[in-house]
Amino acid sequence: MSEKVFLDLFEKALDTMQRTACSTPHHTNLRIQHAILGIADEAGELVQTLKAKVYYDKEYDLLNHIEELGDLLWYYMMFIDELSVIFKTTPLEIFTRIVDVNRIKLSHRYNNGQYSSEQAIKRDKVAERIAMEACVQDLFKRKVGNNGKEQKESIKTKVKKKSHKTRNEER
Image (cartoon, rainbow, N blue to C red; front, side, top):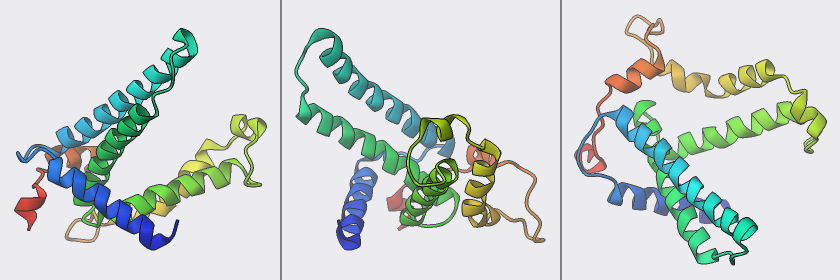
């Protein structure tokens, strides 16, 4: 898939989420919670289809899979959109960082680029974490106080305090 085609799809997914998102401004932490719970719920619905096939010999309903994947994408885009508000950047930059962090983690875990159960078991979680943190360090540096020193509040506290504006209010 070309980068242009991917970016067009990304923009469509983001636009769909923003147009269908709750129009009532609400607490940022609640929006993140909504996204996480939605992702878990929709993933659970996919698991139910697998359970039905494995244990009850039912047919896979591919249309249902596509529908559930669309719902997962909606919640995923909601989460990305909210992170873009928190970090004062674009949803595409957040998405790119997510992909980069995952790539970095896997490259540390599987040094030859191939899955191996031995490497999966004996991985160096500390080295993985340090490498992943380096990838997003500049995002967190945007959360700097007026005197140039990082604020002592954790990002978790900041998320709870930040109110969310709908896309319509921002425009």
